[in-house]
Length: 357
Figure 1 (cartoon, one colour):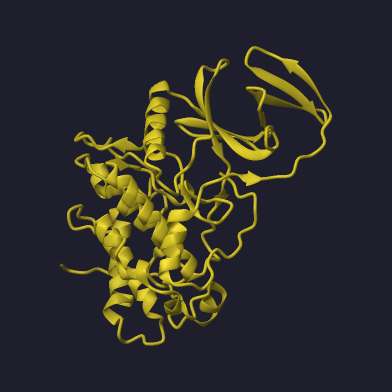
Figure 2 (tube, rainbow, N blue to C red):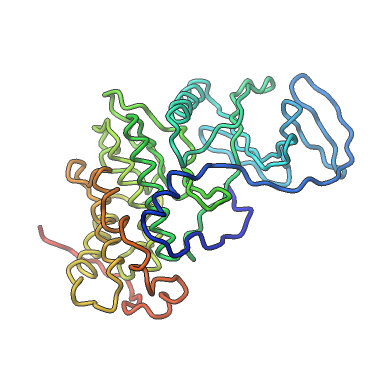
């Protein structure tokens, strides 16, 4: 996905109860755009319409969804994403062409379960059809905004974490694992509320092991590489990587910039854990000038990145973790622009730390 709107601050000062209300009351909607006057001539085929606008040819599916050819499609191993406009309401959408029929049926099944159970902060299916030209299933989905990796205030990151982990809590309670939680697969809607997208790799946990290495490199939990995992714990590890990437401007000298890299593996996250313990958690009461909430964030991150599947923090414990429960008053002096200028722990060159356990 691409960001079509500028990022604006998403979180005003308010107490935690208001934040919880925000996480349960928001809806995931598309981005409205104004209609424009166009002159077009139309040529019909079996399943699509070809429309000429300003001497450019645009394909229209179902006489309703006009492809925006100015935006380059995105192709993955599993699907082809085309950017389009819904002519019935002029809203920007995407068309997800799924290459394999079985994959499409599985993703549609997962999305139906989430919709029937009214799970908030997950992508909402607008429409579904089969393209007669390619015989591929096409999912019509809202076009959303990319979450910026930098520029967020710490309280904005807390809101993202609250919505991400509470949504995973709801998904996991349905015995569903996402298996591809990445920074690219969480986005903002028009209200700057989080939306988890792309359930193409999601599975219902039925006792069978997850496919070995399933997910995006840099975010895959160690047990998935080992091929002996059949529950929802891998999502916690992946969400921890996302949290670490967002916390990078606030947590220095801990190699957080290495999280999410395609070559990152367990050795990477173990080094991050060691540095977080040495530079922050073990020195928690010595750095009185660092806001307490940053230490809480580091503690949650260390527990999410735990290598041992059984020792990793549970989703039930996460939604009750102090970092997610801190009130707005705890975030004083953690605005992004101010913090990067006055952070008492300035960045220094990374160094390898070896702990003997």
